[in-house]
Length: 129
Image (cartoon, rainbow, N blue to C red; front, side, top):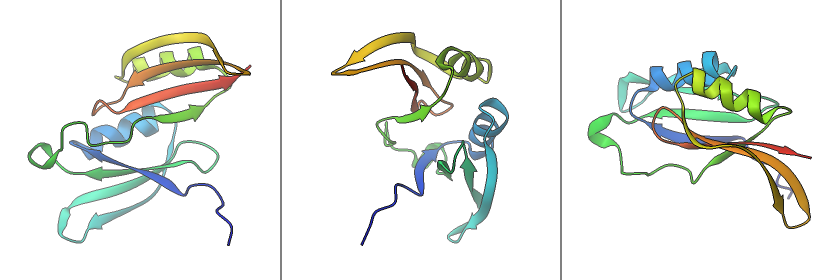
């Protein structure tokens, strides 16, 4: 058996349409699949390819079902321009956690920045230098 990477990362959100707009229009992803939740057909789950097959699954929970910070620790998106990705996210409604910065991670030199998405999920933009 071989593990071939990840298929998708699931994200619980309060407002699925707002998150869909952020990850598609805001960050340039493409909705690749959607389906109603079997237990609540009025809610739709969206899968968004945010580049090179990296998929975010947007799972609506609503305010009454949302857990405090029950999300991923962060998702790290590779990019060739951290500053542009960071600026684009802010223009799409994200809030800054940390501006683009050159970092030394052991023997790896990189540039990264962090933002909070629509439901306060942490998104890191990352480029190895």
